[in-house]
Length: 401
Image (cartoon, rainbow, N blue to C red):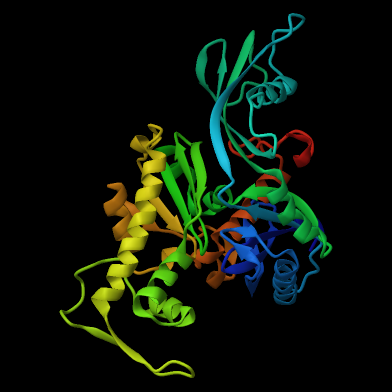
């Protein structure tokens, strides 16, 4: 197997570190060769807060992935999240030089630069400039203007940026191992590559990636990214609520949440209880199932309401035809799609990576959506396809302020 067919995705999450090794095939499909995991320490709300500890955890996950896939990992695509990630939509405009009348690749790059000529905080750097739509001399809906005749080229972009130092901490954590960082990708953008089909993007869809410490989201309308961002709240907050309210250890609360809990109220018998067996340092306890479900319901509902409020600042949520797709570890909560459907008032689905060959257990686990999505993103970039959403930044990541 040629080493350049190998692509590796790394997600440094709040609860877990995940490394997925994939192999690109000539027909454009992907095969997963191995998945490495390690518990995440030194990471809070999707961001590194203890560099040395986080680096050791990443190293553990990389070694695990190497052993399981039987390959040597040299370079990696890394996802980033965190409350510092922001986005906006902007239009770029360039005039075609008078000595020619045909639009070429340089005009495409120039209009992207034009769209990024906006003021962002001095501490921030651009992550992505994702094409939405082109316009040639006022003509809308142009998919690829190269070769067309025209005097004025305009383009609408969705631009994602974040705090440079925080992104650099993630990159440094990988480079110290030492591994080469091929690219840095916003986590929800990565997840969407394998959770949604092109048809769903065209219909309009919202991907909500609910991890341990953050809830990342990305919204598509007419196949283009219109909104994206991060809420600094996730599954760990649900676990913490259970631990505090029922006065049980965090580890027991996490287990209880996943094995016995539900986001749906009124589905259990009156007075139905769950018996927590005694353990070392824990005396055991009997709790009402509806009490547990109420704690979960309130916090998850709050996350959805906060997200809905954020999305309603723009009109795009009104154009979602395919519905809401929930992925990430928190999507494993029983009844979460029912609660999401109620909150957003539209169809909602718990989702995982689609149409990937290889380890079934890996791509059917929504906890791996981001890491698998990184591989899909990388495959499209490496093939240099001009597909929507994959046009790369000009030059190096850190050359933009």
